[in-house]
Image 1 (tube, one colour):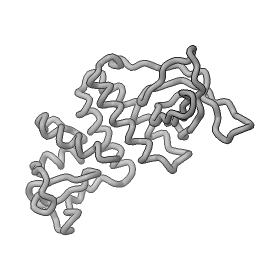
Image 2 (cartoon, rainbow, N blue to C red):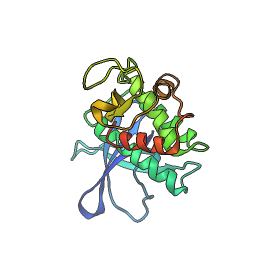
Image 3 (tube, rainbow, N blue to C red):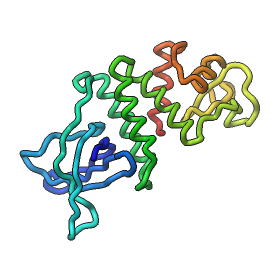
Length: 205
């Protein structure tokens, strides 16, 4: 099987509890410490096997092979990627079986990040996630006052639209947010605006 590591917890004697997002399921497994084991970390894509354990309901993670990315040695891209992928664990914490959408989205994002700015690539992927989950609010009605937004727009957590006067947040041009929500494009966003959206995303999926 293949999957992305979305959480690691250290337990006794340097053993690990590792959560892996695979194509159709999320697996929580036990990994014993050993000098011959390959290094694993949050965000790594791995090929792996699970071994049932009669003494525990948690399977053992074994035969782990890291599947590298083209940009794995790019410190900035890896840092952004790990911060993004960490958010999937709390978002999907109560889920066992999932649609292949999440695995496919991460595959797509990894590929986009080869040539694209990591924060821009990840924000565009986040828009796809919100749309898939039915949480992309394209009606542009203010979350706080429930009135229609007609000019500048502010975004809060989960990219929910508000009036700037209601949320006291950064203003964006209406056409910018339309382009982001409908065309999934950040082409007309300056770097400081992308940074602002990035910090909203980091509040949680």
